[in-house]
Image (cartoon, rainbow, N blue to C red; front, side, top):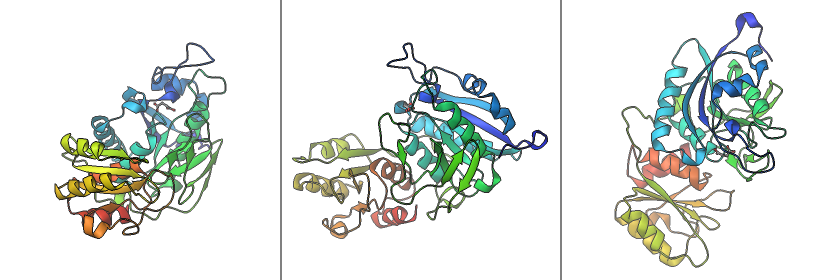
Length: 334
Ligand code: SIN
């Protein structure tokens, strides 16, 4: 519900770019992400002033395909500083939808807070016919300003839905309903700023997380290797040679991979890398020791995490330990 103007909560908007800030030269096709500043986006939604007292900071101006560890570390630091400011009720982060699920999960693991942290994006550029950004932004600010949202971890708001960072995945290249939560469902709904919250998440996050970016200037390199019929070992060997400290296999089915690739992955473990088996299917749990003998080969099963989220958790896990069993426990915990 819109707050009364005398008691408006303070919400900070951290902008990173994306299609929500995108502009088209031609309304039929093509656009440039991150063309508009956050101030221009806010000016397009004057109703925001009924929800919160906003202040803004442009942290980056990129298409989210260019999101990287350096920006993640900066964004985590700015988010932490913001939530540590006593007068701030919540944070909204504008972000491209392509890698939003990874950034959301990263922040969900490293930002220590119970305050609302909400990522928002859009599938259509700001200049498109029926752009979705303005309503998504309005809803995201409504969620971030709402104390009842506290303790639910980092959230993603788009298309009238509220998603948990751990559960959300982009599943469609263009449609507005691209975000889905296959395993554990929605965090809630938000319709024209009115919230309907569902059950809180059960896995550890934010204030309950063991991970931190304090003192980090980089993250351990983790590569994703996509499995397929006729897969060889070359890409796994290339990841080892490139200096990866971990590899996530986007495996076929239950996180499986062809015999030559399996042998290369086992060698990578013996060389000191951590190897996680995830699945390219887009749903389901990868369990230990079903078709692949994880105990013998030293692999880690991704549990419910898709390859791109497994990559985030493995990279942060490697800041703590290289022990495959300790890393496995993290995949059962977060
Ligand atoms: C991006 O991720 O920056 C481009 C796509 C989008 O925001 O929808």
